[in-house]
Image (cartoon, one colour):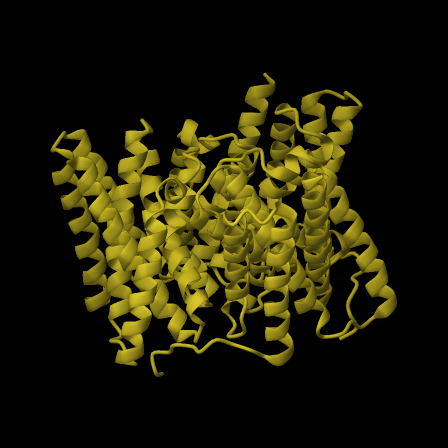
Length: 206
Length: 206
Length: 206
């Protein structure tokens, strides 16, 4: 039950990040195979680093090829769809990225806790799982990674992970905790996107 | 016999990528040690990530220092040679990169299959082993990674890996399969370089 | 005794690199959480890659959360301090980076030798541990990584690691060897910064 629930969310996050990779790749006028590679890197980059750091190898998508097939199918369908649309709304990329961020953050934290690691480690692992895929996508495509922009991004991921760990500590039930935490990250990040929210920044005065 | 064959190809790929790293490093006017570092990153970056993802740690070059010595020697000789040439032909870098791409793709796929992983995983591992070293080289040096350019690159790697997996499935013999697949990737990539071939691209119309 | 000695140095390196991450992050006008993430990536990036390559997983900071707390505290205090200073001297970043480089290089080499790996591998691991954190920091922040600049950087790390391995070979005593090697890297790098020293470079004449 819980496993299925997590698995479904995992696939939704994979699809969201894969499409975000396709959107960036098409902007770069990459060919279908390059698009698929960027979609894949974005979708599994974070979880792959998490698994390598935790020593959970071979990493998740090697043990379960479903991820590869889902990414291939997502890339194929998005390319065909984009080919017909020819133009996509500006908010689509950050919104999909926000969904991937929210879901993967919680799944990363959940996996770390299930391995018996501490709360702080779970929070870091959640953040890694959530932000790294999009970070690689942005670096590869020469964009400024979202995480480096003033708008709330790492903050949304970290707060979601903290929320999940606290819910777990309070034994509020795994599924309930995941939904709460995902909604927390998602609503915070989406609000930041639409109302351009940001925390006060500290600069060296230059 | 097969082991020796693979090993020789592995060394050839290592040398090709190491020289490509030296070429980029000299362009950046790096000092001899910086040049050696970039040569090393390019030559072992892909295989290192592959081994970490597969859980084949310590990674290959830790267990067999020959790779380190080959990279050092290659860097030394290339630097001395470049010092005398003072100018190298423009097609040298992409050509060496193509050789590394072709050889490492097949070696990565071969290693994944030898670990008992599935065909799809072998194709991904081949692509990772082939493209990541050059990708890091290009990102570090502030160039646009080849894989992001319109010309056939990821495509050549993926098709070579698919070719190898199919040959293996048809039990055409390991060495024969490797040669076929390497020639496939190499000829496709070299043709793309010389005749500026590219697949149709999908853009969002901007 | 030796363990404590290494541990203290490790923490000093972690603090130095964490502050360097904060300095870069504030320059980018990131928010407190983004700053903490960049501080963390810079402080544990190199050791994390080293551990993943050596197969020493879960990586060090997962097993010992002290690193996470030290980074959080360092980030918090530096942000508050920077908030009051509003401007920091130009030599602060490269100097802190030099301390992190020197300490982490030796700690990386020491860990590799303690795992029974060869001298050449220890030198590579030292270099990886020393340079990768700062490299990720610079790539993420869109700066040219120090390692790619003409001034002695990789050179200082490599020579420090070689010095440490030689001292170990001569059985000069672990602590003595570490101090010698750290001072070697530090003095070479600091001299390069202040007197703009660089090795002769090889260019392709362009």
